[in-house]
Image 1 (tube, rainbow, N blue to C red):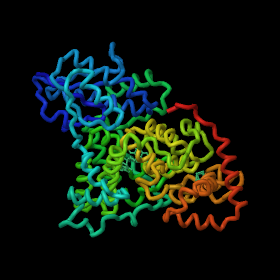
Image 2 (image 1 turned 30 degrees about the horizontal axis):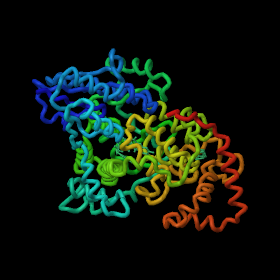
Image 3 (image 1 turned 90 degrees about the horizontal axis):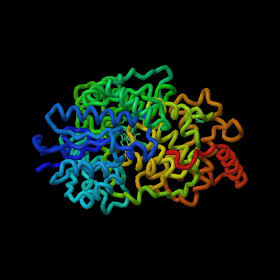
Image 4 (image 1 turned 45 degrees about the horizontal axis):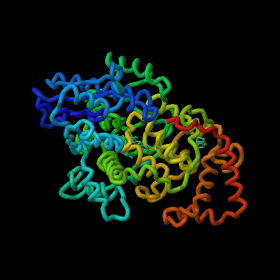
Length: 514
Ligand SMILES: Cc1cc2nc3c(=O)[nH]c(=O)nc-3n(C[C@H](O)[C@H](O)[C@H](O)COP(=O)(O)OP(=O)(O)OC[C@H]3O[C@@H](n4cnc5c(N)ncnc54)[C@H](O)[C@@H]3O)c2cc1C
Ligand code: SF4
């Protein structure tokens, strides 16, 4: 009897659980390009190209291995535009005895899979996604009964369990965390290495034409598309990072530089999230570089922590707390997303740079996301759901399981501290210290008030004043609230008025723009 093996767009791994016991003589692999997935937010054009091109390349790879692939293209006549519609049509075509699918990355897709058994009249087997280090259940077991879910604690358990960067049961080098050596600003004349990018092949170019035609009003430029769309390309990107980026990854992990959006970051999240690379092999490659003396421990530990720690932890938070998690709004933020998040047209140079780079590459590194676009959204009180939809739309690596907790938990504190022990709120001084954005900005980062003052400065204090009832008891916020306590009431009111006047000048993007 035929088994229908459904492969979703971010499940492009030959070792996928769905394919584990495939019988090439009888089974059918179903892959679907559907309009719904391209439009549930207005994804960056490069993101759609990446997913569709990688899917088409993966289908070719499966066929070369003798697998029968039923591949539904976006433009195929009769394409219903939804996963469920296409699964029902495939069931009618192939009459399978069962359907197998691996856990999806997004809650809404899981909801849809859960309807297939009754709608199709065919049993559905949902398999665990073992490409991650920790299963959903493993994280839930770790989180159960804990008051605080601190990533560092989870990460240490993962290090022990996986034996990564461990020597005789102890952390390599004697410390779990080398962050004290990281987070330096970039020296003035240092430039970033040229990174391995991939010239689109004929298949990718065909998809680029399709996307330009089908999604013309979506955010972002297509011209500089350079993402890996096959596993072979992704492995080259990994090698390139290990040599070019990893040695200085730790030192300059938090640094930002105008017109150099990549610096020493890996640029591997799009390939990892699609399944073209496995997190295990990426961590092992970094560890091997350290053991071979090709990269220092502060860089390698910092990098491993991002993948073995943050990436797994974030996924655990998402699956443990959905669906309620998405509605969190602990700081009661309600402002509409300003239009400049889509256009980049703002006199604030840091935001202009980060948004323009996002448009060019569908990429920003973590600190650009957290401390520039995220920090502004936090200080300006942008409604969590609006900024969350924006992040989901604009990055090539964005899938809800990883984007949502990063946005709601890390960037805008909408979960009230489930993940972060305090909001990542910062004035212009932080951006000034970690970047070269401020010289050349229309605003002056040293000024606290007045028309030329950096907006991050008064927005920061206005945020603290407004959120005093919610945040002042947080011990990690004690220092700024002590400073604020010394301000006369008139000074506080003046800052609030200045912040409001500035925020009132921002045009809001039309509702539902994402
Ligand atoms: C508001 C906000 C939204 C984000 N949205 C996404 C998203 O949609 N998709 C996504 O993959 N990451 C997201 N991140 C996390 C992080 O910014 C990106 O993973 C990283 O910038 C990707 O670039 P890179 O591959 O060069 O990462 P590197 O800096 O080289 O890090 C290496 C790898 O570690 C992992 N990683 C690092 N930080 C995180 C993190 N906080 N959470 C999960 N994984 C992490 C990624 O897989 C990344 O490829 C978001 C962060 C913030 C603050
Ligand atoms: S002065 Fe303020 S707005 Fe301008 S780049 Fe610096 S931090 Fe950004």
